[in-house]
Length: 231
Image (cartoon, rainbow, N blue to C red):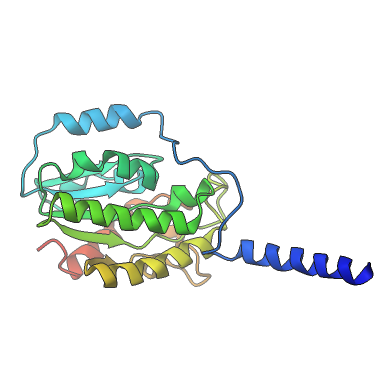
C-alpha cells in the first residue's frame, strides 16, 4: 500500500512538472472564440478600404495597432491591420481581408494575448503554421515576415496576465525560428533588441511593461530599416 501511494505521488509530481514546461499541453481553461469587443467593427473598417498589390501590411494586436506605420516609416502604401486584444484565432478569422488584395508584403506579430489567455503553446504554434499556409495559398507572391514576440516587464502592474510568461514567449520564439526555416520565410528577431540587463523589456521601450513607447517604435523602425526588410 505504501509503495502504491509513493508511486502515485511520483506520477503526480512528474505530471505537474511536465505540465509546467512550455511546449507541453497546458490544462488551464482557454477559449479560441474570444474576440475583442471592437473586432467586427475593425474588420468591417478594414474591408471598406481599397487594396493594392503594392500594399505592405502590418498584422497583429495592440502592439501593431499602436502606431501610424505609414507615417513612422514614411510610406503611403503601408496599411495597419492591428486589432487591440486580438489572438491568433482572430487573425485566422480575418486573414482573407488581409490577403484579398494580394499585398506585396505582410509583417506579422501575434501571440502574446494567446499566452495571457492560457492558449497552449502548441496550439499557438499550429496557428502560426496555418497563417503562413493561408497566405501562401491565397497570395503566393506575398512576402511573409514573422516577428518574434517581444519581452515583457513585470515591474509594472497593469497587465498581470501578460507578465511572468517569458518561458512561453521564449519557447514559441524558438519554435517560430524553426518554422520560418522550414517555410522559407523571413524572421525578424525583435526579442533580444528590447531586453534590459535583467532580461526584461527595457523600460525606455515600454509604457506599461507590454506596449511600446515612442522609443520602442523607433527601435522597431531601426530594425526594419537596418535589415532592409522594406526594400
